[in-house]
Each structure stands twice: as structure tokens, then as C-alpha cells.
Image (cartoon, rainbow, N blue to C red; front, side, top):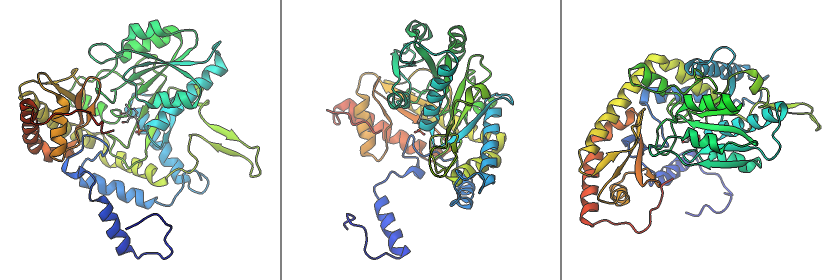
Length: 414
Ligand SMILES: Cc1ncc(COP(=O)(O)O)c(C=O)c1O
């Protein structure tokens, strides 16, 4: 059926629904654990809560704080809960945003404006970033005409703090540590980065987008997660996405600052137009009340003990997967990952051919380019797939070893 024209006559819901289901037919079956990322699911009970809360606020627009004071209240409470989870004191402040990218954008913009107001640099401000930094930093720099200096990571894929220190110059305003990074999912040395930030009077942003809402609970159940939050001196701001390992609805992230002195440079205030004052704290105008309510609801519903249960299940599944993977000759886990995410590669045969074999068996492989590897964000959802995955992985490895499957060109699945 063509969809090129605006329909002259509307369809009834059963027909619309049937078409939507038809459109979905080729999408990944995330409920069967076929995806290593994109969908963050902690079970049907949690999903139900998130959906109900979202639906209760489906129509409300959190831009209208006077019309919908409850959305502003829930946002404030989410920020307080996040600050508490990330070892912040009462002075920590911030907002909910539409995702990691918006939180990062705001951190960069706020760092720029804070520096401009307090101690301007002589030239174009720059950000010093480990190579593992998420592309959102380059995007923010590009949009805001800032420069970036990229610094290679160490052999263990973590930020090289000495090299970053050497890269800092008189125009540097911002340095970054990931907790963990998206690609190799390991933690940068945040304490050392904090010391560097304090020594050189720089803004240190911590990208805890992927891990921020689960890592504290993984630590609570006994795993050695390194310090990465406001407990570390020198940390200025933190982004943490509640729509990822917080299991809220998309789009929902949090951006937090150590205190108001930094935060006051974030908002946008304008009144030179016919309607008068337009004042917004974040980048977007209209803001989904549903996403705020869903985030609030999932944090309240799960509490620390609910997240600890999720953390336990995710770490158990991670262990079963890692055991099964490393039992295959040639396979190895990269870089001692700290939380429920890991990356693995092969020696003696092509990991991209293995990825191709997995793809042909209905899995999204999670391809990493440098070094060639496959990565997985593990959550309780993956409990259902461990045996099938390991069986198919063993077959894919056999095909790659025997040369039955080869790849000429790797198609990254991002
Ligand atoms: C470490 C890290 N930073 C930033 C982002 C960007 O987040 P979003 O896709 O919600 O904008 C991601 C996404 O996975 C991430 O893992």
C-alpha cells in the first residue's frame, strides 16, 4: 500500500492497528532478548507501571508549569532522587531532559556560558575528550561552534588522564569522563579526572547516561564499581538517562550540576516578542508530561530494593553469558567491564563473520568497530535468551572458523 499521500478519508482503528502491526513485522523481537541495546526492559510488571503512569500524563505538556504544576513537582522529585542516588547533597540541582544527547548538549552549553561569565578564555573554547566519548559531544561542539580535542584511550580502553592533561590548553573549558563509555563499556578513571579538573580549574562532566541508574545498585550488591559521581571532588555535572538502565519510558534523562552557581547558566530566558516572557530550563519547548510521570513512577515503584533485584538478575545473566562466551576457544571479554555490560571479541577468526552469523540467525549483534568486537547491555530481559544465544553463537563461530561465512564489508548496526 502506498503511503505517499495525505489520506483523503480516515481509516477506522482496527484498520490502522492492522497496518501498524504489519509495519512492525520486520522489527527486532526485543522481548525475546534479540537486541543488545535500544530497549531497556525489566519485566512486564515494571512495564505496566511505566505505561500506566505515561498514559495518565499522556496529554499534559510540562512546558506549562502553571497549568500542570504536578509535572514540575515530579520533575523536581526525580532530580532529588537522582541527586541522592549519585551521592549529591542538597545543593545539587538540574532537570529532566529528552535523553542523553540533550543532557550532554546542556552540560556543554552550561560549561561554556559559566566559563564565559566567570573566567573567559582568550580564543575558541575547546572540549578535551577521550576517544571513547559519545558522538553527542562532537554534535554539541559543532552546533555551538566550539572546538574538540580528541585524546586516544589507554590499552584498557579507559581515558588516559596524563595524555588528557597534556592536551589541555589555555582555551580548554571542559573535560569528560564516561561511567561507563558506550562502546567498550568500561569506566574512565573519574577520581584522577576530578583531580585534573581541580588542578586546572576545568569543568568535569561525567557521562553516566548508560550506567547512572543501575551502577549504584550493582555496587550495593557487592560488585566493585569505581567512584564516578558527586562523591568525587572535581565533578561538576553528571548526565544519567532514566530511559536506559532506569527502565523509564523514552524520552527521559537527567542532567545534574554540583550547585546553582553552575546551573544558573543553563536556562533560556527571552521576552522580546509579542507574548512576553518565555523562560525554559532545557533545550526543548514542549515537554512530554508522560515521560516525566513514567520516570517518577518507576523510581518510586522499584525503590533501591527493586533496582537491587534487577541488578542481581542482570549480573547473573551477564555471568552466564560471559562464561558461555569465554568457553568458546578464541573468544575473550575486553577490558574488565564493571557493570552489566560487556564487549567481546575473537582471536584466530573474524568477529565480524561471527556477527554476520548471528545476524543470519535473527540476532542484532551489537557491532563495535574499534577494536572489532560485539557488545551487550545485559538486563533481566536477557534471561530468556542465554541458551539460544550461546547455541547460535557456537554455530556462528563454527561457520566463521571454517570460512563458511565471511564478510567483505561490515555494516555497523547503529
Ligand atoms: C554513554 C552514553 N552517552 C550518551 C548517550 C546518548 O543518549 P541518547 O541516545 O539518549 O541521546 C548514550 C546512548 O547510548 C550513551 O551510552
